[in-house]
Amino acid sequence: MKGTIFENSRVALPIWFRAFSLLYASPNLTIRALQLSLGVTFATAWRMKQKIGLGRKRTRGRPKTLQKPD
Image (cartoon, rainbow, N blue to C red; front, top):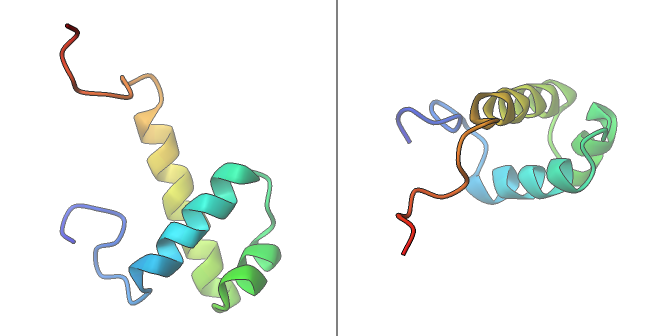
């Protein structure tokens, strides 16, 4: 998926979605807890948390929807 945080990732999309779910429910989740929940290596969990965190910082202040008001 070119141009996304998934680009060049070997991690399956369902694992990414699970990581999103865990980190949005508990933003202070430790990397070790993320690692154990996802069944990935510590380095992979660290990288995923970094990429998801960067994505969250980039979208702050932007509208949540692109739909025109009625």
